[in-house]
Image 1 (cartoon, rainbow, N blue to C red):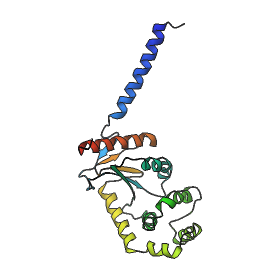
Image 2: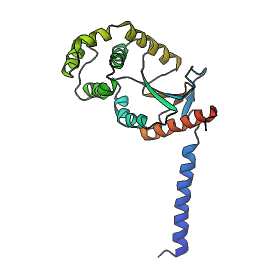
Image 3: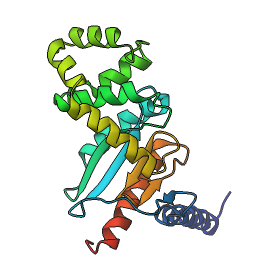
Image 4: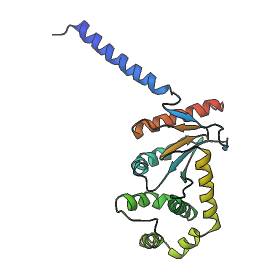
Amino acid sequence: MKTWRGILAAVLAGFGVCLALAAGAVELKEGRDFRVINPPLAVDKARIEVTEFFWYGCPHCFDFEPLLAPWAKKLPADVVFRRVPALFPNNKWAPPARLYYTLEAMNLVGRLHRDVFNAIHLDHQRLDDEKILFDWIAKKGIDVQKFREAWASFGVQSRVQQARELTLSATITGVPSVMVQGKYLALTPGNYEDLLEIIEQLIDRARAEAGKN
C-alpha cells in the first residue's frame, strides 16, 4: 500500500508534467511550429489577418473545415479571417478556385462552401466539369444564368489571378496552409486541434509585435 507521502509525490509529479506540457505549448519553435515568410506580404495593419489556403479537392482541407469554420467565427474583433483557393503554376486547381470566387461574388460562400466539399468528397461529383457543376448549382436552387454570368465575369477571373500570385508569394507548397499577418506560415503538427492552437499563438505574436497587447 502506498503511503500518503508516496501518493502526494505521485500527484505532484503528475501535476509537474501537466505544467511542463502547458509551458511547452506556449513556446513556438521556428521550423517546427511555423515558418517565416521572407519578405513578408503586405497586409492591412488595422487588424491581424489569418489566411487559409485550401483546395476543394484536398481530403485534408475537407477534414480541417469542420474544425476551422466554427473556430473562425469566434475570433476576436481585431482578427480577420479569409480563405484563398491555392493555385500553382500548372493551373490544375483553377476550376475550384473559380468556383470559390463565383460563390463569393454571389454571397453564397456561407451557404455552399461546405456543400462543395461534401459533393466532391462524399458524393464523388466532378465539379471541375462545367456541365456537372451547373447541374449541381441548379439542384441547389441557385439561378444558373446568374451563376454563369458571375463564373465568366472579369471580377472572378481577376480574383483567380490574384489567388495565383498570392499562393506564389506566400511560398505555399501544400494545403491546407494557414498564414498569419502575411509573415508566419503555421506548420501542421499532426492534428488539426494542435494546428489551431499554433495559429492562435501566432496571432498573439503578431498582436504583440504590433504593440496591441
